[in-house]
Length: 470
Image (cartoon, rainbow, N blue to C red):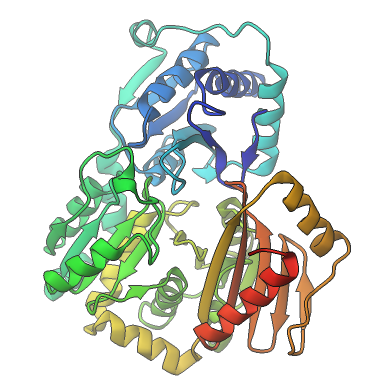
């Protein structure tokens, strides 16, 4: 059965990610577009550098055009945020990207976008999911890709310049030119390199690059920017005596940062630094939005400036919706995705990287100094995150224990409240811990935040032991 999660539809290549299922999703989306009268308006589609991504997109398009849908096909691998930007700029009702984002190399998938360049809502993905599964066993018409091009149903486009020019117009390139930063880029074998090089070379930065070749196995690492996968970038920053190292995940919507000393800067710290910079240096106003597993440093910064921080479930579509509702300044998540008001409604690693480089240039300080300043002003908060593979049986047992019976371990400290919005989150006066099921993989994750890493680790262990996790 086809099942969409928090980040689109994802499945193991050759298992769930098959030509048959791709065509089912294409047929379901085509039927939805025809009912809504936007078949001729069409949709914009793109693909990343994963194994079978381009081929899968061609199969997807052959199904769409077989149903009479017009398609704008970005004819080169590209970042997911570029497709979201193009959907918004062209005023399209839908868009799609073949990617599994930060998942392991054996996975692939499809992300859907809606009007304004937003991640498709649960209502939309549920409708496509149900119709795709209902089409199982039916005859799905297709149209050969080259024939569809000849008939004008598929148009090849290159929206790269418009997307990059939009980012350049939103950052202070004059300040960046004056600082002349040395930067190491790690696209993690993904799709961000040409875009980031264009932005940073235009701003007169000195650039070194690692992990830039096309490798469908992502160097045999997870294509997610975290402390375990950015060891090469840490070494490169120190070797080149760089000011900062910047990494993006497989489809370039998430960001990872290494400071000038070779230390990993967490996504939570990056998000807090940028929110503080927008409020205090650029003088912008507005609340913040974070998901339920992201740092409460944002809450402290918001409160200090007379603003609010809104908490939403995991899934960037929830962040985008809350940003629009509350006219928020920034929205982000602990996995490295963020966006700022005025840019696209989805997360964008290239934009986030550009804004961080601007912040570093304007401050005149080293990145490690900025993190220290942040903690001096708002207090230290350190996060811990662990995950476990999960069987369906174990998942149901834990769900029953934590979400149905609503039992909790003894944390040996006062509990302020418990939130079951997305998993089980327990709040304390000086931190929090959450247990939740992944929406993109068969895994369970526990996050915690406390004044020290040791305290955060202890909270995770207490929750894991109670749930029977090794």
